[in-house]
Amino acid sequence: MRIGELAERAGTTTKALRFYEQSRLLPAPQRTRSGYRDYDESALDRLRFIKGAQAAGLTLAEVAEVIAAREHTGPPCGHVAALLDARAADLDARIAELNLLREEVQRLRDRATTLDPAACGADAVCHVIPAG
Amino acid sequence: MRIGELAERAGTTTKALRFYEQSRLLPAPQRTRSGYRDYDESALDRLRFIKGAQAAGLTLAEVAEVIAAREHTGPPCGHVAALLDARAADLDARIAELNLLREEVQRLRDRATTLDPAACGADAVCHVIPAG
DNA sequence: CTTGACCTTCCACCGCAGGGGAAGGTCTAC
DNA sequence: GTAGACCTTCCCCTGCGGTGGAAGGTCAAG
Image 1 (cartoon, chains in turn yellow, cyan, green, purple):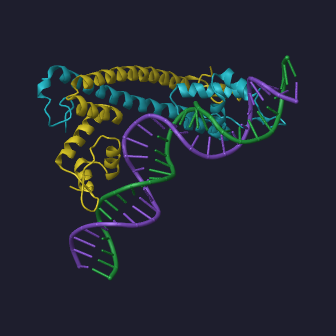
Image 2: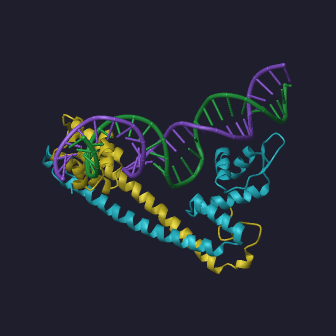
Image 3: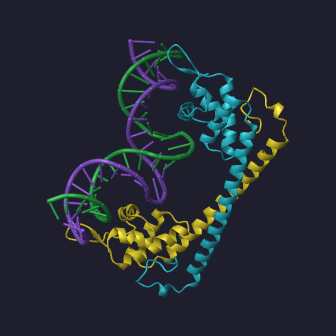
């Protein structure tokens, strides 16, 4: 199958496929006599794996790592579990951070409605944002 | 005050200050005869505002917008309130998204412990990540 | 034979918020 | 007078996940 067809079937672009190959996420496919890439069905499986891993929030670098581990040392289950644990911890931290930020934004928003606009002196840019 | 001193007092770097000036977040300061930047105390206030706005999750582009609005049309309270509302909505969406992702990662992690590693066939990269 | 769709490589660019370092000028202390 | 700390402008680099376009080759249809 040619690159355009694979891209369409996988719901991505030819650009992305070449990028994945360059990033060692996709193995370099066969080439036709004229140099065109010629994929088989396994490429589609690989792309589904990549999409799934991305949907789980793994970076392409992590996906490449899992694939390389698989090729060198067999099924990377432990590796993947560790990656997912790390990812979960990242997410917890990030969510907590965003919740704090959300509260802060809400507080500032409340200031914007309750503060006297006349107090918006010429001295500062905006009294809603605390300067300090 | 020279740029190094301002940077130190504001808890930032000279690189960042020149970048802010270029991005119209800081007004271009006086220059000494030899071309050195020469800041007054108001620069410090401005930097505190920038830090506060950044802490509220506004991008530098948004901060620049608020500053420009302030210079052209006076106190930008309404503008700032709208920005904060948008920011809060962004945060809500982002937090919801991350919570879903967190749940998904947890589900996959559970698969990693409950699935039979022997089922990790040679056909796919990793059976923990659903392919499709 | 030519048009148009497809393919190849390579190089550059996006946003974000600066950081790194070169080449050269200046200021202060010894 | 000279060393070292500071300043200037300039351009390139980072990470992430690709996208855009130029220059040229190939393939099928008309």
